[in-house]
Image (cartoon, rainbow, N blue to C red; front, top):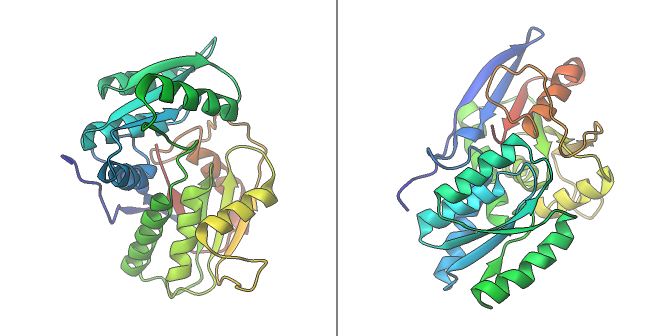
Length: 286
């Protein structure tokens, strides 16, 4: 690996409506060339483990705005592996997707066009094509890259952050929720810290079944709010009603992804008077 991911990413202070908000800049965890989002931590660990088990080729089924394919392509180049990106063909693709396609090519990924459709259907199509064209030992990665390694890496970064900042008061943490993987790591890290009474506000960037999403995040974080173990950290899931390809245009004083984290930042600015202080905003990507 020629580039090193960055631990202890900075925490910056901003003021919103006169209220201080600490912003965890996890978008700065990756070196130049990698996508600026914290899932790259888990991607590198997971693909490194696959490589150590003899896997040489991995595939990923991309969506219209995700940086995941870029992350897979970059990580495979770093690790000496082959990436194959299954590329849905939209009639009017967003400029963001066109930028991501340039990144796939930059890192020598194989690109397999497929018809745009439901992500799960496309994943099944990709699985068949990957085996046909690249052999039965090629591995198709799961949608959204919900790796245990990403959860663990995020939890470790949360523990480091809390130790550095030395919070003594109960903390409110605001984080975007997509697949729920990073949010689960945030929750797990808070559970591992001695800080009592924290509250996580998980803001869904895509409307859906909020209760089901919360259950999924709890399972990923290995906490069970409705079971025999009651976590010390409360997790509140919020669905503001965003569609996946909706873009937040809310002003933001730091680099923040308009299709992901900025939706959570917008929620915070609209509800900051009701969020207990101190506030930590966990910025996943830009």
